[in-house]
Image (cartoon, rainbow, N blue to C red; front, side):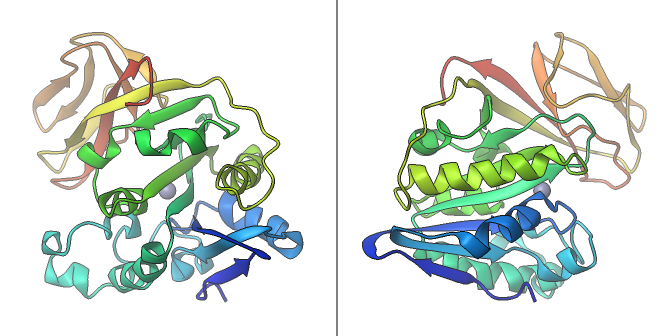
Length: 275
Ligand SMILES: [Zn+2]
């Protein structure tokens, strides 16, 4: 039931935008937000596409079925044969047809870490859109440290890609943030009348992603998203090796690793503006 892309057209001509939800099937806030929004939504100008990223994972309430869909938008030479045979790879090819049509994307996610705050992931090209989002943190630099997501794909073809993290996936507030952000996106993109004022937002730029070198990476403690770490602070143990910060940093998405190459944390730093 989540296979098809929904297309809404305005009476007036305008640009094309796309909203994706459920690219990670267990992050339900976007799916639930669309359930509330779509029955009564009227687009005034242009065209808006709404899509459910990973239908099979949404139906089974899993992050993904075979491989992480949000890494399947990388350049094709990056993938192994088995990745190319996966359901998610095929779904990414299907979704790309619609991403190629649109000029801007909003892709809605949530975090598995309790108490996570909401934030947007984008590059400077999304400045005039995200400033209206109901969030106070905008994070850039992902295209470099973590390529392969939907937002990366849009930026790589000269479009605008925005990924929105709506906070903890089991917090009902995440649905409200998703819902308000869809409207903010549609307004900022000119599809409906914009009555919003820009939000006060802080900026973080990610500079590093750490991949486990062994099959046993353990964290020194549980880290909250954007927790501030001092220079030379112990983050975790990779096999026998201590992994520490090289400078004061903010940590994101920290978790243990059980395979060589597992993505176990990201580091960023505060910035004055979206760069
Ligand atoms: Zn996600």
